[in-house]
Every structure is written in structure tokens, then in C-alpha cells.
Length: 113
Image (tube, rainbow, N blue to C red; front, side):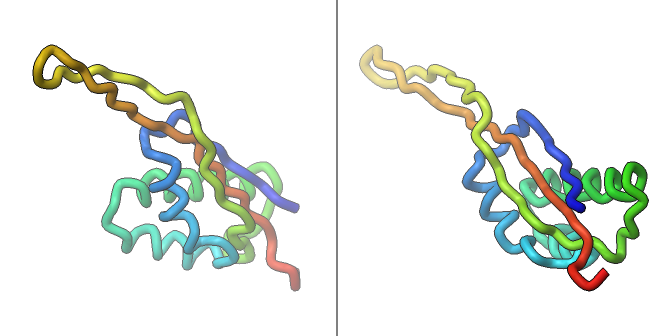
């Protein structure tokens, strides 16, 4: 059985989120949490929050043991982009795009259990 958690409209670029989540796939949940705690960037905090939520969903809704869970899938999808205008020289303007993402973490039980 697989359990997932989704964080929507996180103000982090999907590319940055994918880079933080690539190392987690296939790891036991406790080791994945330790790696996210050791990472210094803000992206890891957002991903750790979603991972913690997925583990809590598995424990409370499906009576799974947290020590037997592994990270099955992680992905970050594009969310709406906020556009801002900044003035430039000679009366021109540049558009700044502030990207956001939907972060999904799926956890499941180990194969031997």
C-alpha cells in the first residue's frame, strides 16, 4: 500500500525542488529525514515537511509502522507562475517570473513486510 502527501503552491522553483528530492527515492523514511535535516537549503525544509506529513498519514490512516516505510516516489509539478514587472533603463521593463510548485511525496511499506 502506498500513501501520499501533497503540498500545493509552495514558493520554490520545481527545478530546485526536484534536485532536493532526487536523493530520497528508495531510501527508508528515517534516513531520508536525516538527509533533509543535514541539507542547508530552504527547499529541504519544504520537502521534509511533506515527507513528515506522508508518514503521519500512513501511521494514522492506515496503521503502518513508520520504521517499515520507504520513499517510493517524489515529484514536483509546476504551479502557477507569478509575474512581476521591474523598471529598466531607457523606459523599458523586464518581467520577473516567480515560480512555484506542487510537491508530492509517496511512501510505502518495504517489500519484505
